[in-house]
Image (cartoon, rainbow, N blue to C red):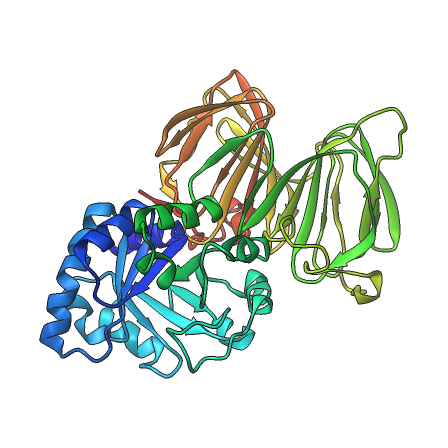
Length: 441
């Protein structure tokens, strides 16, 4: 694989196996079950023995399209044909590991606190732990679920919770925001490693494109379809909350004011803004998209999300409100884009395109999700699973690492496009962000 292929595969990885030398049959079973990334942890082997031990790992991961990394041996990555290296806080530094392995290979870093998650240097991904006590790391204190809740918003790279994880607690981890997990015994010591891996992978957030008329929860965004509903005034400490009203009327408390919005309106609440809403018209339904970015809010057990009382509000936080047809306008031949909301956590753009709009080249995003909702007409998507025609009312949520493109499939199409996080998407539309997270493939 080249560097782009490795990072695209990493972006889609959810299940990480850490192990010493194991039989090739066990390794094959784990990979068939859905393991995305394998780390060979043999810190004390001489160079020649480690290179020999790595060879069956390399071959098996290559056959299954999985990633293979060494533990704390950047100097042997090239010799072993590994995709990268994983280092701890007390090992060689991330930047030194990067210097040794080069830009095309991956560097992972173990982290144990918010400060470490926010100071990752040139790392490509992080491990977060130790979550639960485990005999494989007897000297490490278990941080518990709270560290997962911290990583839900603090981590800016692909991340994996690690430490004492198995099928008995993986659902709890996902509910509290885990994007992926790293395991040892849960697969290595299972009676049926393939079944164990498959069961763990099934609990984790989706990493392929999702076509739906319902909800999707991935680490980058909670994409929720709702009817009526209400919420008393509150704030979110670390994530943005955005609404696009599909039908009916909603009344919002936004900061110090109240606004009643009709269908086609958009409102976005940045972190620490007081907001609440209700359907003010009895006997009618209000249908809307409710988007939380980053994701994690929708699954959080009661009392464990970052939702707080109005006393936590910031006087500097301001809502973004746009009526139907409002927004900064950016056009290319056969398509008009209206920017309805632009925050670091997400950018929401409403688009109008005719049947001559050919869409972008096949491309991939490595660090953000690309999401669509068809309001009128239809879009045709090219995905790895094959072509998909999305009619009005359909949402398509594309996680990072998934190659995709789209075009109109009707005389006229109107659709929402949401990038989470925004990664400077609006500046890209203006032609001001050539480094936008979009890579042609």
